[in-house]
Length: 344
Image 1 (cartoon, rainbow, N blue to C red):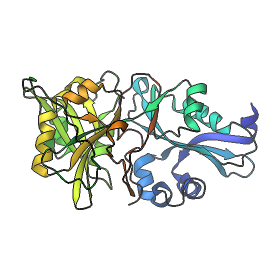
Image 2 (image 1 turned 180 degrees about the vertical axis):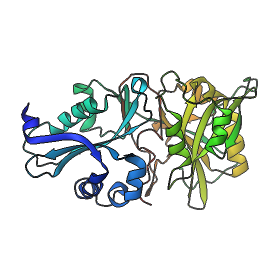
Image 3 (image 1 turned 120 degrees about the horizontal axis):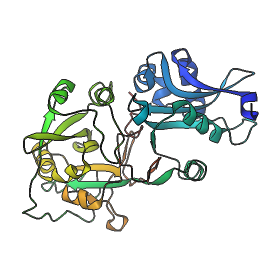
Image 4 (image 1 turned 60 degrees about the horizontal axis):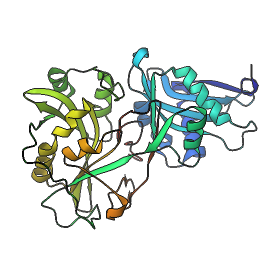
């Protein structure tokens, strides 16, 4: 028994802990956080039967929660279990140093994940910690965008330099984007539970829960149809603001090379549905693939603003850090809790 075990209990939360956990989030994380105010959403996001996907650190004497580490699993297969970390913190007044690091260590021991990621890692406090102590790979998410050619006035983005990719007219095969309106349609057309290089493994139940059963957001799911076969899935979410709208592509499941084939399909969506632009927040995808898909990287020297915060709306570029257990992992906006609502 070490000094931490003498003072604290580390364990997975259960349904009986929900009210205490919500109170802890309101008091020690943020007063108006959705997980501290919306019980139904907390159970949707982190519920797993009678368990809640949080590791708690409790004071043995008082029984009070002094630390938490939330997580979201993508699969139940232990061999390929991918887990995303969310909301890691301990109270500031705990008497034992490095309790936060110990909480992360216990989280790793209890969950026994195969692969791991987190998005929105605090660059000042957490990035140095997880890099040094847990040998995680860290970096900044990249923000790609594709403007609607027919839009001249932008109300969400601020465009100083109108960049676009000069695609080769003879670029070859292009995918058709076929929209799915139910998870049953996905199951009939696409082989689920496959493993793709550098992508976190996502099981069918997770895809259904994440994109078809979400209680607040409405996601759209397209099949990437190449030569009459659905080769991949593309997920997006519409955002309406300032009498206009944009399409945020938030996930991709399939061979990442097939992402390069969506240029015509995205162009059609932008023009037919009159979106101001479409964007991708991601890491691990080559600029060559994104350019072939018709997207350009938002670079500081272009002086363009492609917002990332919408609840509330902040019209500025935002630096978002990530951490992963493997150096070449591919992440998208919907991974971890990066595309979670802030309020109902």
